[in-house]
Image (cartoon, rainbow over all chains, first blue to last red; front, side, top):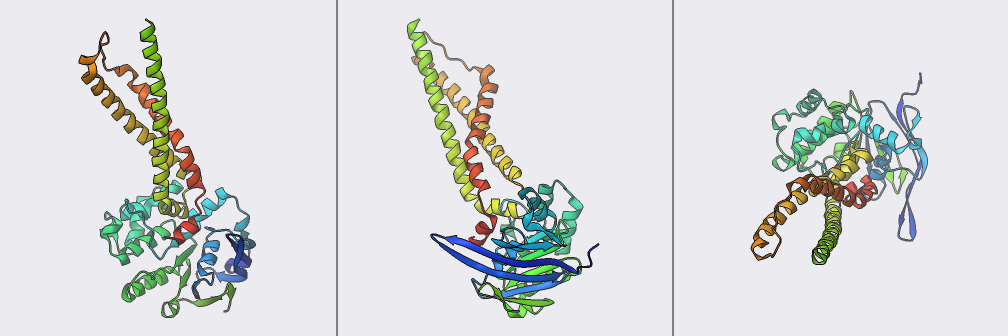
Length: 222
Length: 134
């Protein structure tokens, strides 16, 4: 058994993108440790690398150099097949634009990760929707829901597999202040069970978290 | 007899060309569908869809387009041949129901073959890039 309390260890992570003939380095050797069930906000100006770092932690994107350890296991060394399993069971994503499938109902959107994992579980879907207060709206399609409700459905979809980590990229960016505060309270209520990493521009909302990490020009300025 | 044989081989050539055009049309439709669905495919990848699952969905969609196209084509062909019957000499067109399963089978295979290029395109989608740009 490991004595390490850190759930996530970001070690010397560098990310470079090719833009035409130029190579641009977005992240410059980032080091970061996040404890189990911690609520961490990542703040920084546009282009500072916040979303890139979040995507790399969730392995939606791979680092150019460095490693990401989840419970001491380097996930950057994993195969594509293992990463699919990692995204299914270990992380949940919440995006600024909700990213629900428009042709599916709230229920079907939440059920999607279970369907892909081959774990169809109606109780888990109902429970996730109940948790975000939308059990009565389960048969509605995204277009019939308010933006706040759509984001709550997206949160239900992100937690339905009971992941260890919830990655939220500007989850209130498309919402008004009141609805945004409700969404943050909802994220905060999950922290007892899940590690939450939230990317935000909003200092006031970031204050809800246990710790704020500042990114500036691809470096941590904590 | 030579005329009948000539007509038969011409009809076969037309059928093959039609099949090729149909395959390209389904492929083009599927490719457009993948482009429209970039975001959805990115979301599915982010919530745990494997490459196999994404490709299976596209092949399934191609097969459905093939079945629907095949059945509609068979129906139109049957109606058109019965309408053309009064103008034909020494030939009496009649629906060949026995070849319907073969037509549907060929259409399913056509739809799936046509899905190959779109499926490759879908596998090349970078979910982080797609979800960032929408």
